[in-house]
Amino acid sequence: MNPDNLTALITGSTRGIGYHSAALLLQRGVRVYINGRDRQQTTAAARSLDESGMQALPLAFDATDADQCEAACAALSGGVDILVNNAGIFPDAATAALDIDEATLNRAWSLNFLAGWRLVSLLMPGMRSRGFGRVVNLTSGYASLNKPGRNLLAYRASKAALNMLTTTLAAELDEQEDVKVRAVDPGWVRTDMGGEQAPRSPEEAAGDVVWTAMAADAASGALFRYREPVSW
Ligand SMILES: NC(=O)c1ccc[n+]([C@@H]2O[C@H](COP(=O)([O-])OP(=O)(O)OC[C@H]3O[C@@H](n4cnc5c(N)ncnc54)[C@H](OP(=O)(O)O)[C@@H]3O)[C@@H](O)[C@H]2O)c1
Image (cartoon, rainbow, N blue to C red; front, side, top):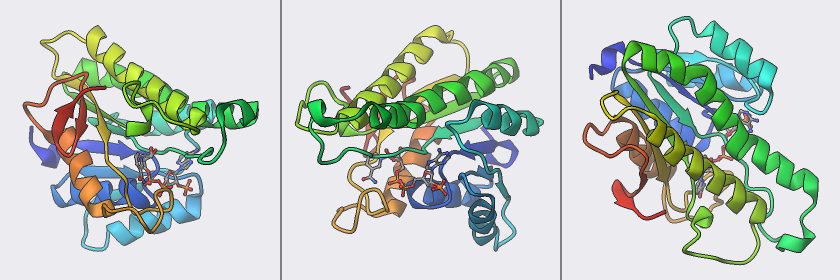
């Protein structure tokens, strides 16, 4: 894999883990589409990453909007080689399962799962026809069925569905194809979502995301935490 010829789309890369993942991929010579909902913020983020002449390209769209996703993917004339489904929300930290409202469940489902499925549906056929592709899904330990806990049902369930997307897609791909689908749990990270108390920096988490995308020998259909395969 020659990074100079690769193109990536990272959803939710105007800040946080997505932004720093973009910076690391750009440093490796990958051309990166920067995404967020707001056109100005997305352009500003891409410009700030592009300072040293790297190829950060703004692509503003709302990943929960099917029409916007289709239009954005249609604008990617050559498709992408790497898709990082990073955009996510954490909407129900202190709410018990029976107190959640349907709107919150739908918002989490719509971004944390459905947007990833939609973008894969739009972009993976191109990866398969070109014979190379990497999909990285940002998940969380909160989605693990082995670690049940209180609250966060919207977040847990939507990320668990994203995990299922990871394993199902990988199982449907031919083993001979160089198209890999992986999930990464970045740990608890100091971002707008993770807050200031989180122990990991977004740069550290981004290093794991990029490793998950680029690792030549890492399995497909697997979950990685701190660059090691872990159980779902
Ligand atoms: N932080 C943690 O501790 C942690 C732990 C485990 C997993 N994760 C996962 O890691 C990923 C990144 O988290 P983060 O902490 O970096 O989050 P963050 O700082 O809140 O950033 C979220 C990004 O998503 C974008 N976004 C939100 N809604 C969007 C939409 N509808 N369409 C397109 N982009 C959208 C935001 O951009 P705009 O607002 O500009 O649109 C922003 O760039 C998430 O999937 C999260 O669940 C985070």
